[in-house]
Image (cartoon, rainbow, N blue to C red; front, top):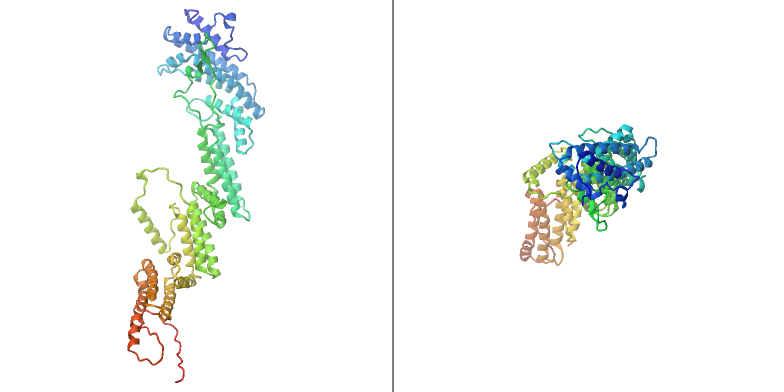
Length: 603
């Protein structure tokens, strides 16, 4: 119930100004229980709210009220800024604590004032025709100007800049972080956190923090790149851990902002709750808790980008060239600590545009290891297959591209573009030209291992001996009925197909002749053996064409018909006690074996 009546603006403003001053006075309680006994003319909270409403909508004193309130808020802001004194030369924690204490009280008082004068804010300040700043910004601007006049902004920004450096170095404590959070919120409220289009001038905290972070990351990256020990794999692991820790710290430099209303400022309904204990005042004002987080969340992506550009991109290529080989050697399978370090290193290389360095390092390392196996001369084919299986699986998994982020059909590559690129790549390899390694194809890891093996087995020093060893491996596998799928992979790699064919044909002839002359062999056994040989020839034909297997196929045909021809010959020949197993062979198909003189016993 109203205890007085509005008559003149000046008298009304004196009452309202007394309310505002009590709110901004840290030494007094703005709402004591015995308020009516000591100040019987002072309105209570609910009455202030109603008075402002009547001033705006009934008496239409909104312009006078706004101007008078603006003058009072600027005076209060300047007085509270003066409470900070001279911050220059003080310890960082002392500067942060002093600023947090003053701003915490001033900010809460300003929010209470915004709530009490909400009708003025809505009807006058937010009217585009009036071009008047909202009440919150009037108070915040006054506080900022009070600090600028005393040179306090530079001291606070410098303290927060040093705190950010301490966080990057791992030297910040929980208390300092808590104070720094309040300091950042304070700078955001005064438009001192980041550069904006308004008339405020720096220094801006975000600009300084990003500058320091860029220099720090560049120096750290250079130190990591210069570090070389006997264990290049350990160096790569340390680099990966360091960069990912920096990325994580940058990503969480600012905590997510709290959900807020669409309006920039809190409304009276947000600042009040109903109270059943106070019969006179039905509205109880509560201070708004500021958002947590040392740096603003908008700074985190900028810091992440700095880590990628200043710490990772200039150095990851060098680290990859030195470390990928040892990490590949340490991976027994697509699992384990070394594998995940390799996978993370490739992730960093992808972010730093150093995929080509990863491909080059992988190819050189695989070729060197394959050359060592080839020079050993012991079970070369089996050793190369085991090496390819292990390293191929590791490279295919570790160097896999990230999962797609969109299922849009428009993002699917054109099939003709893919075919054109593959044809161009094939022609370039056949002509001995360098293939573009910048293309980040999905399965480059496995392809790179296979191409490195191809280069190794076709080196001039070992190409012929490898082809001979591969033919011998086929001979052993076909004699023992083992699978030849792995050997076929090696066959596709070798370019000395003529050497392979000559040795394979010699071994094939001996295998077929042994089958034909084996004691007690049935026609079905011979048929099965020829079928197995023809299965291998079918794979050769698919890879090299019909001309490559022409003589080999003719040898199999001779063997298939040899049984019937021998039986027919023996049926007509006289039985003179000499046991023979004749076979009719086509001379053009079969290789020329060394002649062995036949010594007959005396008659």
